[in-house]
Image (tube, rainbow, N blue to C red):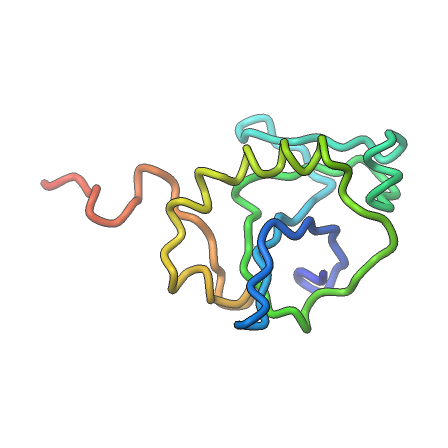
Length: 125
């Protein structure tokens, strides 16, 4: 899928076909030490299965809801062991996305809120 005009790998986590949408976890080549991450080396078996050409990092903060017509199918598939890791990583993020956020497009910035910003959990001053 394209983010900011650049192609990025994405793993479909949930397909919402009746709405023409998918929840995807986008990958990036940027490593950030401060986030929980799944690192997929480009030359690993999983990297080859996904068709990656370089080391790719998947963060729960890169979970997006996108229209199916924004996705381009690439060759390859997500190996079951990697998909299980992805599901575990995004399970918490999926649980805090509201139904409205799950239907927002990538351009509408559908991001899970950090736990400190969950609606109704604000600190009173």
